[in-house]
Image 1 (spheres, rainbow, N blue to C red):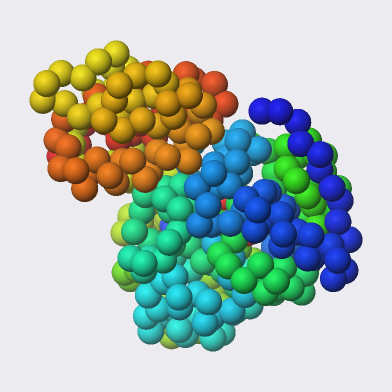
Image 2 (image 1 turned 90 degrees about the vertical axis):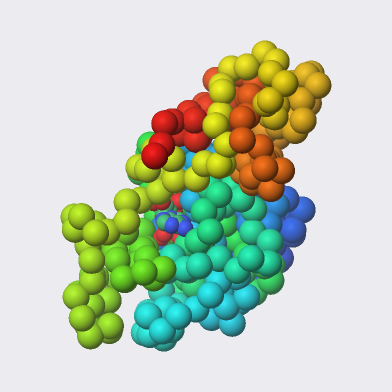
Length: 316
Ligand code: TXA
Ligand code: MG
């Protein structure tokens, strides 16, 4: 990846407008929330979201949390249910993320959901985050703003130490008050805590009036990253294919004459941006046998290959 000039922006009106503009034009802007700093991108823009993964050097695609300014905005992208309404009322804005059914017409990049039909959403409380989200007026995908495998950042200096030269801007909002990631509650079935965090589990249970499933309970859904094939197309995948047989649909990479091509010019970041969209297209085409070109295991290629291996894993 070529180095990028990283601007450190003050949290005044001008800095917030510049950060919003960076998001509008498909760039990456780190911003403060009350939990940790997030690395933000327009959640509707496949290329911008792929750039998050590239900047973090994440070796696999995990779904990302979408940040929104208020409940009305959340309801545009997700189906709200009674549990969600209760929790939102009690804890938003705040250090809680809800996993909810994704609306079919939401327009969220498949790279944000990692191909799932659910969305993790949060309304943060930090005034700078709120101002940025209001100015941008759209969904902001943001994982913690640290290189993969490193500690989550709670100051602008932490973000700068890890990501200078890899992102467009850091909006400085001082220290994060909570300093711990949000509590994630899956509201798509029996309410379940997927990750403990800034809002205590007891407070969630007290709000709902009954105990909630916890990560150690066998009935709790696994965090998507741990599932071998959490999203896979219906067809069988044959990896590292240098051609397609007559009965196969070819998902290509590079200068090959494939049915769909992740990146005709052989660019792994472009391929990442196209990956989930094309896996869905293969389903829509009714492809039952899919040949996949080799993808180099460099940069985002590692995450792509991780996902393709999961999708190709034997299933029942
Ligand atoms: O406090 C936070 O949550 C921070 C700030 C920036 O908002 N964000 C954060 O994001 O910690 P990240 O990417 O480091 O962690 C997101 C977690 C992952 O464990 C992911 O598996 C889970 O959220 N997640 C996101 N969407 C999900 C979904 N649809 N279903 C289940 N889990 C989901
Ligand atoms: Mg993280």
